[in-house]
Each structure stands twice: as structure tokens, then as C-alpha cells.
Image (cartoon, rainbow, N blue to C red; front, side, top):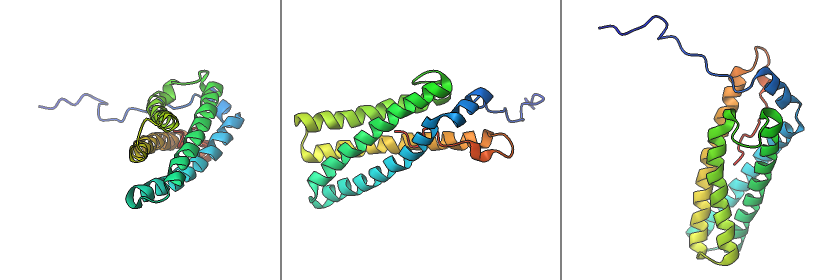
Length: 177
């Protein structure tokens, strides 16, 4: 029995991430460049901090450097989240949860919650050193997933860019959280 309906095998065109007007606003916004700079900076901070955290967990050395590196990573996260919300407002007309970035923003809230829990636990002495470092790893794992979401979204935007303008899809919030 063939249940094929005419046209059902055709790929449905994905809804564009940006309308032409949103693409224009994105390309003209200085916040697009800010996000494009902050994302790799935050990733570099993350990579250094991850090494410090893992070294401390495995060797027991460098606890202060590891603990404070997570604070620096969290400050970078807050910075990129605030500037990303401004970017989203300029491009989509709302600070968070714009349809094009809804699920990325939802997951970003988890990333923020874990990083904030780390800061609170560190400030108020709620967790042992090892527990703090494990919490940092959980926050970092969520960050990696969220960064993957934004990288995927960036790739989709590049694929949807007008012909001959594939470079127009600048990093919006890639590696945002």
C-alpha cells in the first residue's frame, strides 16, 4: 500500500531565521559585532577555566585559580547574555525568547542558573571545594550544549543567506551561553 501523497516527499522549506528587515537590522547593529567578539573570548575563558578545574579535580592543586576562573567565566557569560539580549531586542523587537532563538534562550536560562548557583555557593560557602568544581563542570556542560545550539543556528542562518551573500550571516549570539 502506497501512502505517498503528491509532494509529500519534497522537503519542506525551513522557515527563514530572519525576515529581510531583521537581516538588515542584524547586519547594521553594532551589537552583532559585539556578540561576534565576545563569543570567542568567552570560549577562550571557558577553555582555560575548564583546564584549571579539571587539573584541580584530578591533582588537588590550583584550587584558587580554578575557583576564580569560574567566576571570570561567569562574568563573561553575564556580559554576553546582557549584550545578546540587547542584540535580540534590536533585531527581533524583544529582549529574550524571540521565536528565532526561543529554545536557545530557554536553555541559556539553565546555563545562567547553574553559573549563578556556583557564584552563590562560592560566596556563601554552601558547598565544599570539590562540590563547587563539580557544579562548575555541570554549568560548563550546559554551556557547551547551548553554544552548540547557537553554532547550529548560525549555520542555518548562513545557509539561508541570499545567494552570493553567505558571509552576511554574522555570528549573532554564537556561543552565547
